[in-house]
Image (cartoon, rainbow, N blue to C red):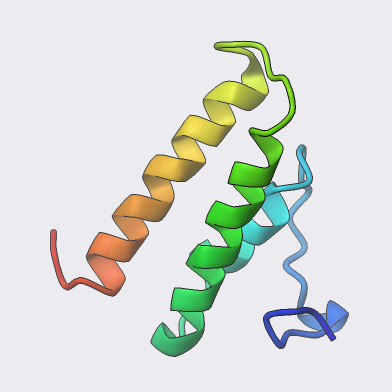
Length: 84
């Protein structure tokens, strides 16, 4: 059982390029609003943890992180805040 209550059998079958992307994928695929709050927090935490290590500016991973961070903000606005 994973931290967010999902089992490995429920893991999305989408190849990941970077370790933090699994948490991001869980967030964007979550349909339950209550679980979505936790998934977004988990994804943000995973991205923040990655940023504690050196990363080259404008590298593919850096651009993916920026896109994911913006995607999480949009997801929160659309599905939790009722905006957009």
